[in-house]
Length: 326
Image 1: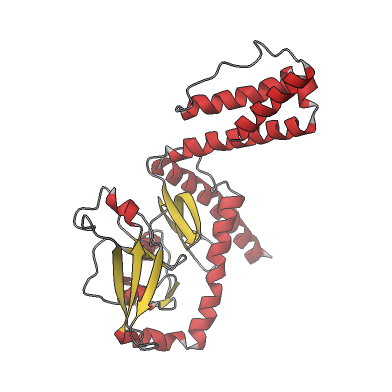
Image 2: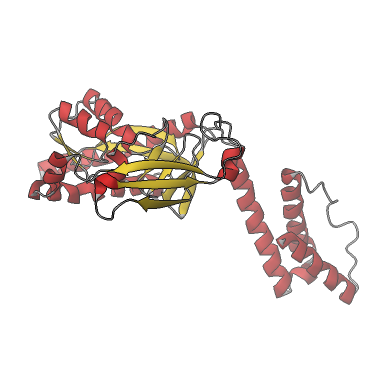
C-alpha cells in the first residue's frame, strides 16, 4: 500500500511537470513473490532518492520514500526471523505477543546466574523449575528456598529437596479436572491456557457458585479456525464441532500448607526479591544483545545466551570480589 501511494505520487508529479523518468525505474516483478516485491520496493525508493533530486525535494514524496524504506527493511528482518524453524509465538499478556525464544534463568541471591534453559517462545515457565534446580546443583549452588513459579509438580520437587517454594499459588495451575488433556499448559502472564500446538485460548469464562472454589470451573475457548487446520487436531478437535474448549476445576484450598506459608513474613520478604531476576533478564536483553537472535535456530540462540551469561557472571563476580576486599 505504501509503495502504491509512492508510485501514484511520482506518476502525478511526472505528468504535471513533464519529467522524463523512462528507463530509471526497475522493471516490475511478480507481486506474489514477497522477496522480489520487497527488492522492487527498495529499488524504487533508492531510485527516487538518488536519481531524482527534483522529486525527492518535495516533502510529500520524501515522506513516502522514507516510509517505504523503513517498512521494507523491517519486512526483510521479519521475513528472516519468520523462517526460523524453532521460533514460536509467546505471550507477555493476553494482548501482547512476541515471536522468538524464552530464557529461563536460575540465579543466586547475589546475582550470579547458575543455570539457563532456552526454549521457543510458547513454552510454559513453571515446568522449567525442576531442571533449573538440578543444573544449579551441578554448578555447585546451595539454597534453602526458591523464588519461582508454583505448580503441583514444583511444590513436590522443591519439598523433596528440603526447600521452600516462594511462589503464590494459582488455582488455575494446580487444580485437578477429569477432562484435562495432555499437553495443555498455563501461561501465567496472559492468564490463558495454551494448546499443544502453541495456540492460546482467545477467551475464558467461569461457571459454578461464586467464591466457592471446589464447585467452580474455568473454561478456556480456542479459535476453531486454527483447530480445523491444526496438524495435531486428531484426538483434540472433533470435525464439525462449533467450539474447542479446555476446562479446569478451581479448588482454592487444595494446598493449605502452601497457602498458610504465603501469609508468613518470611514468604513476603523472599517474594520481594523476585524483581532481581527480571532485572537480570532486562540486562541480558538490552545490554548484552539477547533481545535479538543473531542466528536462526534454537541451538544458535542457546549458544548466544551462554556467551552473554558468562560475560554477565564474570562482571558480577568481579564486583562481589571488590566488595569483599573493600
